[in-house]
Length: 611
Image 1 (cartoon, rainbow, N blue to C red):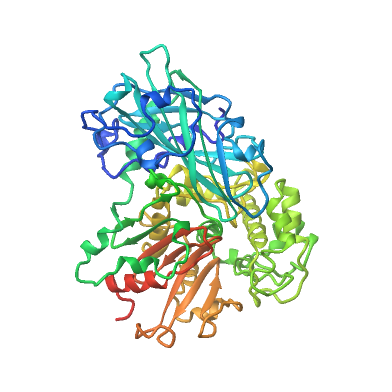
Image 2 (spheres, rainbow, N blue to C red):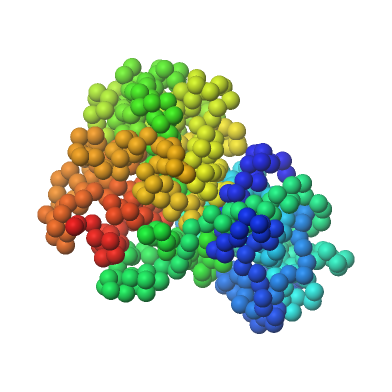
């Protein structure tokens, strides 16, 4: 499979983000931590040796941990996997149960959305870790699915007749959409036996995708071709380097023990939620420790929670587009905020009046070009649907401009539009190319200058682009694929380090303070969200793709001061709170719930907002 990014990129220290919490020194990079020391005497109840060498079709999903997780008594592997794994006939095999399809995506029994896309990946092994050479979003050419394949594990069980057992996380990503459906694969392999590999069992029973939910499972014949993988030693070394830069983690339940005198009630972090089953995951980064929640599926707890991918949706507006504008401001001066859209995107003539619309106006969702100021009416309208489904750049940029007439002066009226974020992303791209040449790419610059230096995972180093292509134009308004560690690290950069990396300022600090509503007068630099329903008027505001909630004693009498809660927010129920006490709380969900006041109340017990 041809790699869409350079080998050097693949071998960066963000290649393997989810391989545990044991840290290694630079002198011991050859073998990753967390060695397996069990005897191999495992009482396996699901996906036994006999099951994986059976030609019987899988009847249903199994419990995630029983089938795919490393068991407690697993032994270190005696086999080494290096080469390619190819699944046979995945595009027309397996079981499928449709649970929800609001957009009528699935077309019936032979629908490509009911089967995996073609799958052929190279892997190397490092100790007990199985490492895909290509991570991040992989474009397959399928009408239905692209892939993200994560690092997994290899171990030995006495009941596997000399074969090693491998298991790995993967996700199918709906083409041209941000939807992520998480699954796992497992198989047996040997370099010493005539049959190199068993059948591969897979299942998908979890997603961050409100409008398209399903279970998919199956068991497929596979081909394992052992071979020397180019750059394998560098991939192995990158494993330890990635692990060294993981944030220290504890289970979420450890909060109560770590703060025993705080009176914490962990149940309140999820209070007020009607659909807790729709929560993908959650976590809290506070005082240097990342407290991570579980990753539930419809088949129990996901076996690779620290590497479960979830969709950013509009969290990307803040974590990419807003961050990119602050990066440009630091690189080239704050005058970049006043740059005009029309000077960098020639298609501006296709709709509205963009004569005086600046980068800053657009990042405030205040271009003055809109149909309605009613809640999400422009975002949810048929014109926005056309923009969302368009793949070619020429079509997408036209659909971003065309529908919206001029109705207000720029910078005066908040109207939420993902299409406007796409326009600004292309304008920033054009501005960067004027500065650096035609080969510059705004996402790649943020990847190289921000995401990689803060050690995001490989999946965090790719994004959705036009043309269903790895080389298209970045979307900007949505399209990142994150894991727990990624979210905590972005929060740390913005909320704790003031946009500095290794002592160097990379995000323009004044605009960052404005985005976090930490200036002397936050109201003067932000816009009201007119359709927010709160007891106290003008408590939700917006600036530079960041939302903020004004917490006042009039509405929240448990606090004796007023403060702002800035947040990144995304479709379906994704919230990343950048709290003024330095804590970052996040919850990713697809149940259309954004309730987080209970979490704020509990975090206040650890580090009070009012002094």
